[in-house]
Image (cartoon, rainbow, N blue to C red; front, side, top):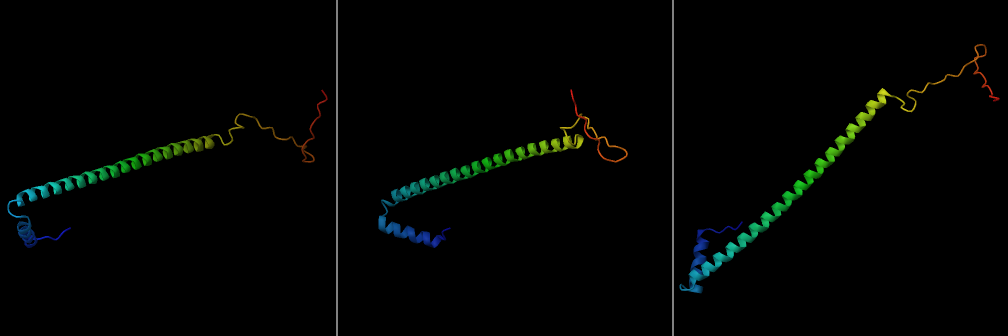
Length: 119
């Protein structure tokens, strides 16, 4: 991140000692350390909160995907059951109903005329 080596730190310490003075330098370093600690904690807190949110979104997305998969499996089972019933009973509305074949006249091969019911 920052490329600060030992020579740069020595230069900053010497300038700080000259500008602030030897009597206020320990207090200034202590204050600087406190500020850096607070900044670090706040950054770590924000980072943890963001990771938590990302994790929660991931969990929500996974739960949604699982619910969708369960729904798809339920529909697939229903379709398979319906297909199985359709192969057993090709036309469920006509199951058990006798089908009357038209009676044909053996000489003309024409269907016989329907008889009128004169009641």
